[in-house]
Image (cartoon, protein in one colour):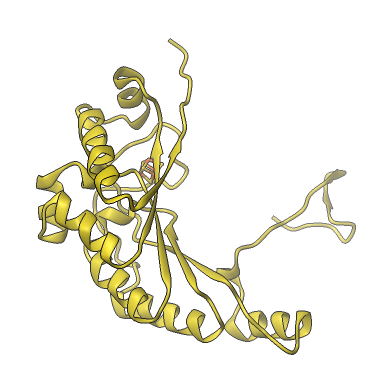
Length: 207
Ligand code: SF4
């Protein structure tokens, strides 16, 4: 959609916000040099893991699927993005976006890489794999405890969404039966490791 020279569409004012991923590295470096020529830095980098998810939330904007996309970055490409961000000064990597990070089979390797680079991973997740040994084994080759412990060892913070404290509403929102108990188990495991920040979000549905 194109905008008019007065930054409006059909008389309504619009402000376009684009993510950093729309800009080249040269453009970003130029911006920071001009903003602070003595100390051009970024603080954090945001990364989207592949568009794959184990839930079907009714409000999901990502349209995540259960199958892998042909266009996803390789783990080496993810690492290269991180390395470039680190060179620019990033200390934190926010892992979230169009897919569920705990469904990304290279997450542990990726988190280890971040840690080796001296960066702090922040994983935004639905948390289910941390309460589901079968799923965790299938994706990461370790049970939920070990997955949690590995994230803890690499100083990862977890931001976990909880759509409701009520089983019935939770499962209606995430659209997958049987997930509430796994989620609650994940909360218990994470409490043991104290490696998480929990964001509680309860959505109301029309009954
Ligand atoms: S957990 Fe996130 S990515 Fe998965 S369906 Fe829900 S909103 Fe979408």
